[in-house]
Image 1 (cartoon, helix red, strand yellow):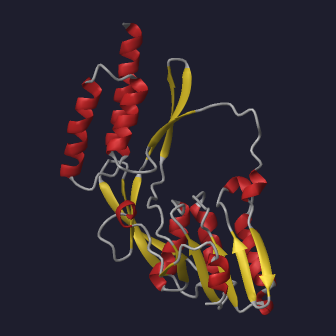
Image 2 (cartoon, one colour):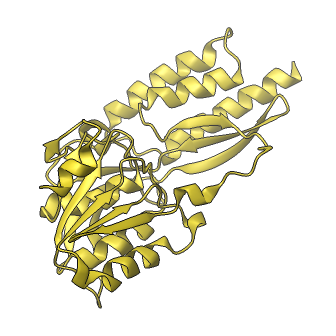
Image 3 (cartoon, one colour):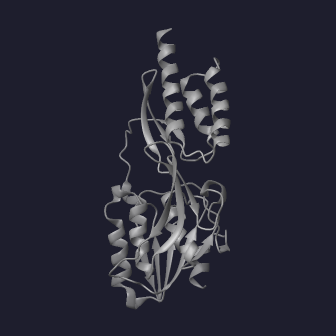
Length: 276
């Protein structure tokens, strides 16, 4: 009986966190969530994990999830995610699998690659098809060398300290010392998510690059992470705290995603873009 009471408190805790932090865009949206949530909380057939999972699914947001924290027996080879590049003729090809800060100052590395080779190429192909996000500041530090002027590329809507919705413009600030005026092609896919989409946004809005590939996944949410223990197992719950709107769009990124300028799904996409 006591265990059931504790688990009920856990579900209510997550529910309250969602209500206080998730940016419902209007009262109707919040009321729909509340009504569905009450039904889920009242279900006796589902356990704590399932109830929390269902609460998060109602949000229809890829950043909202619950995962068990398992100790890995193998250390992940993070260097598989390090950027790589190839200079061929007059084309600089850069592959960026992640924006993770665990990789170090990759923004500085990428800037140096472009700056040191600037006289050797006329076109840059940036491949982020496998990149599911990381640190948006890292991504925008790199993007800044390709812009001369500030770019308002969208807005985020989030809750302030009093719980009220506030709107904040998203602005790309150019690098103050470096401007690389070269043709840019960026390869994108359905895996592109989160900070990678924020990286793409100013290029898309300012038409500074040609985006080639497939529509992105759709989602940038700056989630908070809440640790939980359910029946002796450790979990982590992620709850989105903002919604990003690409400039010119009336719906959030989860609904619109980012479209390529040229849809191209064949395996020879790298060779194809080098000829554009």
